[in-house]
Image 1 (tube, rainbow, N blue to C red):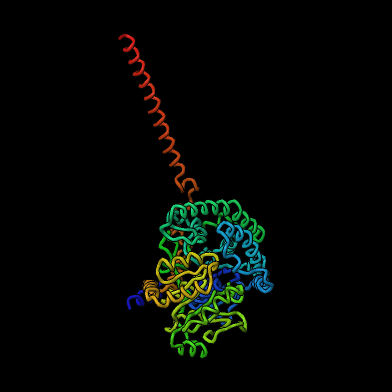
Image 2: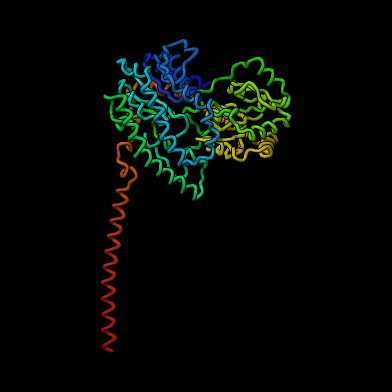
Length: 520
């Protein structure tokens, strides 16, 4: 009751201060999961009376009823990705064994090419040359720093949206501390406390990233900016100019780490109360007397692309379960489909996880899937492939609400034993429910928090008072290298002086003793 009262009070007292603002959202990635996040935030801003424009690879089939909502759809990028997937030149399962150094370089070379397609797109260029002005520009952070210059171009404050928790990709841009001793890189499946060799690799990866981004990535982004915004600012004038960062994270999901004042956690803001399921799904879930296992590898990974031996191991496992299985399968048929398995090319995941008959979620361990399963308190079995999935999976293990089957070790025996362990040991469900209670125990809902802070930036003209002073320091001052060098220099001088005088004293004593010996 008190929580609702505070929320109503906050929004009623600030609504008149933030009249319908012009807001531009840039969510450029051609991935459905990233679009879901951007769309959830931008739609809600429109519903609350703002004039919203959204640059992305997708469009809204049912635009918001309130406010104003406009899609600027990037043509060609999504189709190019889908074409590569069709001709089998790109299979996401193949990158499971990539090391973090190789992945960094691969993404560093690939993503700028994709992001340049956004800036040169005819619809985006039309908007750029329209002479429009915006109050705030919200940019999803994903190796697309050149696009942040659109905030300056449109005379707007810059808000950065980050699709996961605080890490290397965002921390340096707002001066957020990230101690390497206990905060692992998102590409590593480490959690605190780390061993010595884990901390060593974490440090080496940090140094590698620093060099790669500052010597290659940022210069490339700056060239891209100058090419498509000839009168635009220098990249380094906007790179560290974020008003706030909206982090899609929360301590119920992610490891607790430091946050500077302009980093705002809104993890789970996209999750909505469950809706009524389609009749066939409702009947399937209701009539499964032994419960249902839900299996989905997300929107980017396609189950249909699983190698035959992996698929057969999964099928053989499912066929021997007493539970029914609901499988997101992207084809019309599945050879060898057991009678207890129901297939669908698309499934309303949030609504399915809310059903009380769901006993287990077999997932790739993506951030959105992890968030949604915690929201509903469902234990997971993770088969992570790339990105932050391995980190999310090991976090689930450490927090006791899930187990991991590494993709390289996926077999009928391993999968069967792991499923039975989770289903037969009540601690996994209890820990999932505990995490769910932590998730929901907030002063304001994550969506209300997000809207409040977007409007806060508009009301306070970019909210520069939230910016930490560390952003204005050169790197050697930020890391106190000048102070350390001074202390080492003074200490060395002291030791040298001490050594020099001790040497003189010892010599005098030595000669004095020799004279005494000669006299004797």
